[in-house]
Image (cartoon, rainbow, N blue to C red):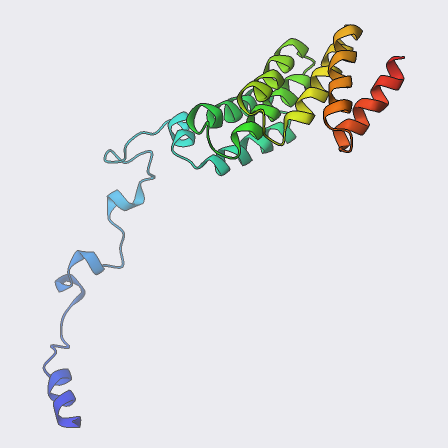
Length: 178
């Protein structure tokens, strides 16, 4: 057994110089490898929009939520709307619409917030964001000094979701309006 391995290893030419070694195992990077992907001519150019479009809904949602937390509202809305347009049946779609509404609400764009929250109720009537959407519609109307509509939506939350956090908040707001 030793003789077999000795013959194999002794057959290697140990006098090979570095120049004789193929370039693929060279220690030196090629000039092309030194370029960044943006500088290389063989790298396809991908815009940030295309890059986002190719990501998972979870990735896009997290990017949107991070943008919202850092007050980059335009980016947040764009990310959330991307989820809804690309993945309308995904479990995050109603959350994305909800957070789009929250983003508009935070910016005090109450009519747009109401449109977003109504969209949840229309598209995902059985979803877990409906109570919160109704509550925020009531808050939005209240912020626009439209107490009649505010009361209408807040009462709906109290009646339809009596033992929920949204129901409790709606009840508290109704007492404030009276």
